[in-house]
Length: 202
Image 1 (spheres, rainbow, N blue to C red):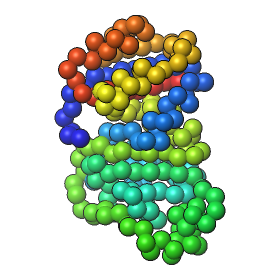
Image 2 (cartoon, rainbow, N blue to C red; image 1 turned 60 degrees about the horizontal axis):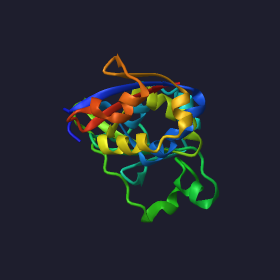
Image 3 (cartoon, one colour; image 1 turned 180 degrees about the horizontal axis):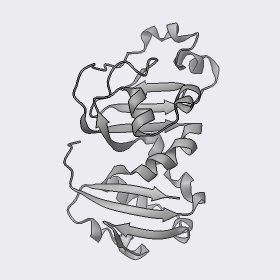
Image 4 (spheres, rainbow, N blue to C red; image 1 turned 90 degrees about the vertical axis):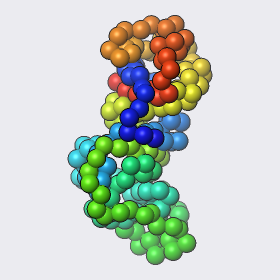
């Protein structure tokens, strides 16, 4: 995903009860524009503005590029990094994957993420995936910040929205211009672009 995108900005104001509609997106992963070339701790605390105690106590399992991470201040997030965040998971598997857990030594068969240590900070994108309790706790924050969706994925999302969504939709804006339900569903407003920057306010 290049840093220069052909993109349309879509802002939705929705009833809070509609949040669960976005759960599949948040589990599969959403692209977020950030400053890469920083530590995972810097990304979570300074860019996503999570409280340090929340990161320490609530986010118990973190994967970067498919490998578990224990130390948040070492290594660097790169453009294109895939970041998965989870609260505590049950059972031995959860204990094994937990950051700093007593069973972390059992991870020997799990590939460790490659995180370089010295790139210059620059604008880039990360893919963020949320699981279990963190979906509801961090999902609204990511959606309000703005997430990038492929045009085809967004079109499929629109096609499958229930009537309840439109009843709870308070406002639709494309590049700052108000649209109605019919205009949004037509997708004509997208034109030739391939990406949608979706921000949702509950």
